[in-house]
Amino acid sequence: MNTYATLSQLYALGVNAEALARVPVTDQLEGLEAASRKVDTYLADLNPPLAVFTGAIVEATAAIAAYMLMSASGFDPEHDDSKNLRQRYLDQIHWLEGLDGGKKLPGVVGQSGTGGKRLGPRVRAAELRGWERGWRGGRRA
Picture (cartoon, rainbow, N blue to C red):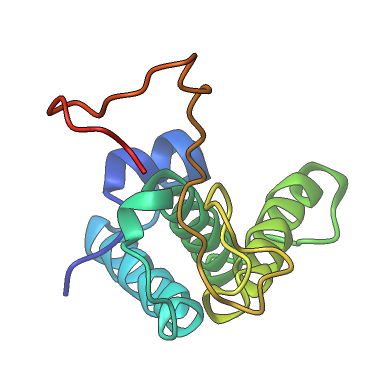
């Protein structure tokens, strides 16, 4: 299966590689696959291309995988040192839920208050400044 994040992205965005030193690499890859499947459940109804926010998906996948892997290895999410990892996991889940099947995409024009319809760009031109002829030289009506 393809994953949304690589091992190096997991270490950079999810959890330090040293924290996963006792977790076999095959298990880490399985954690990334499981996190990618979880992210897929939130992205299933999206229509726009994922390139719009690919970086955010990578970050969400890494944070979810880190939390899942650390939980499986027995860390205590309620311990003060671990609260940051749990909070990042919850923040990413909240962000994914906020996509609402494509109705609330970050950085996409025309999503709020349009009933899910996308808006095209608005283009305005300056006044013609007294020009009487069109670009082909014909008279405009």
